[in-house]
Image: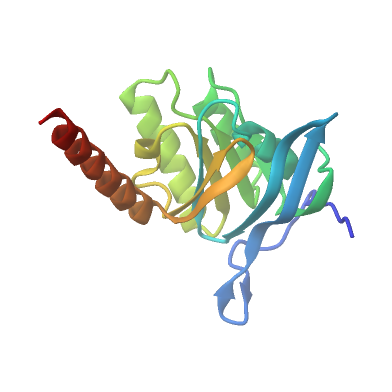
Length: 196
């Protein structure tokens, strides 16, 4: 059964609590999106709670921006369920910090931030990061989409790694970094062994 709910104009307080746990402000279950015969997103399951910044990581064309578009209500999913309470999409690379500040003035529950650090100097990247982190500390939620794992360091604790419109990893940023480091070391050792 297909449901599609975008919480437009949600006015719930930021400090929502349900049974002692932070309220889920963003959820998707079995989310699929097709453009004609082309599958753009497939089987996306996601939960982001109040107070969290969740990373969406992947290469260009993997579906990050499309996922944020669905969560913002700009695109209708083909199947699955979606809920993003009062989501505001920030996707203007040339003015992300200003767009983010304007969005926060409207007190949204959820920020969807698409590639916010591309082309910015260090000071602007730091300002955008601080605005997103402050939003989460105040009880909002944010999804931070990026191609770079290092961009999530110090911002998100959890992430979803997309490739080809599918989830390839969902878990902690730290665990993925450690896994990547271990795999890289193994790859280096294998190359050295073959070269010897």
